[in-house]
Image (cartoon, rainbow, N blue to C red):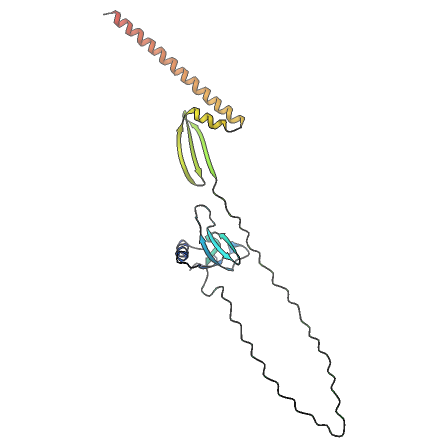
Length: 227
């Protein structure tokens, strides 16, 4: 059983998951990291996906069902959350009947009772403990990366810490169309410079190959004439 200040261990989370599958709702106690509701008792009603959010332990506290992280709660000790039995109030014993008074040689006078005023002290209402405001986490962010290195354009996609698509090579024309969707002048200028440099290098290689081809054809023509 986990201590109230340490949160849930991996084995305790697995035990809670099995209890939920069996239809039970295990009780937990909030630790100091849960804020002002530390020491209060709630019931686990659901375990969501821990890869989507760190706060995947859904606890019913009062009328609310809020997500918490395993560090915010610990397994509640036995008997936690039960109301102590109210002591039985003994029934008042019936008062004995008053015996008549006898007075000699004088008329009995009626007793005059002073009105009793009871003062009731107003007890201040207990202050309500503030419940930790928990914002539900949305889906993890999606990142699509277009990169250029070693003469090749690549595209990769990642959601949070999970890789959706490893970097794969795309054609320069496709990369140019992707960049055209981004309305940032600096990005367009950088891509234009890369494309211009690639074109210049390709033209130089083509010119060099044409010169080598012309030299080879001239040599071949000389060899044919020598026959």
